[in-house]
Length: 448
Image (cartoon, rainbow, N blue to C red; front, side, top):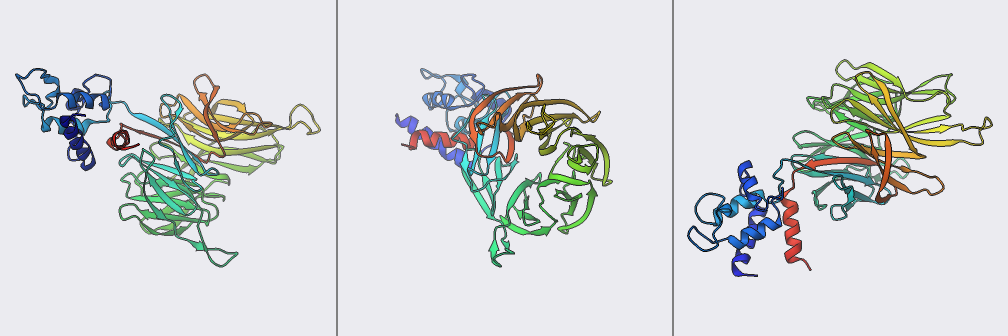
């Protein structure tokens, strides 16, 4: 390696680490010397080879003179370093994070290739909830007793311990059982639902807990209001709780009937809350009708409902719920117990189904049933593909993640990934981060 290359590379790493400059779109395109669509390591090697040359010298190429100074020098390097790792097309990279709480892993999938990315995955004891901070690029993970923040390269950035609660059996203190987590738009606050019947509020700037709010039995779903002044809490109760965040108190509730699992989802504008609830119904073999409800959080009222259970089913168990990025569809994963062809109940059939509901008409538009047991799922940001965890054959109880073509209504091949559980699915979309690029370079040159 030449001296010129060593100097350029050292300055390159230092500049990336300190983040001294910002990129401009025109400079970004110019920095992609090989026009590959990304300012990457190949471009860096080409830049390093031309570093130090000036107009009139043999081998000088003006395309490396990014600041127009007639010399490929440190000013050009600052421009190039600010753009390193970014895509020139304006596109984003999208990754799917899957929390496997039994194995203690958060797996990562590149949905452009559907390949599992082990280098981005990380281990966390009992991860149950995931949230993404688009400003910082951090992935937040709620575990049994800790809130973690991880970088997009799978490195732990920091953690904040959840506040212990008194154990009713032992009389001592124990972890409160963190479950769901969400962060506000400015990424200054995080909210974690806890099995102990609490919502814990965290200051992400100072990285401390701001206290716990009692909200009732098993809070398992969280959503913020449009102005982020209120927090909506799905509970195993007859209503969705409403928390005033200024006073950190439970101030109201939205009546629903018995929530089946407490999970909730909101429209992109947050003008609607979607939950699944049960009501007694003698016409159902199970004794209960299961409905998807649309709630108005402002008026605290029911707007619409649709029945998702079938009268003949012996059981209907909703598992997860999600809303498309355009707000036009609500998706639900549901396990049904069908009596099968025999009337003596000796041939029960378990069917896992992904249901799509059109929000405008509030009607079911599709039901895709290819699994015997369905669990958590995620829908790609463009709405074309679903990623569904489940079991295809109960004689071989292997939990896998299946790709679903939503346009065709078909289950495709599973990912090369086997899970012990699938608690939470999270998509992250961002331009290639300088931090990731820097990690790659450090491993390449200073690793083994």
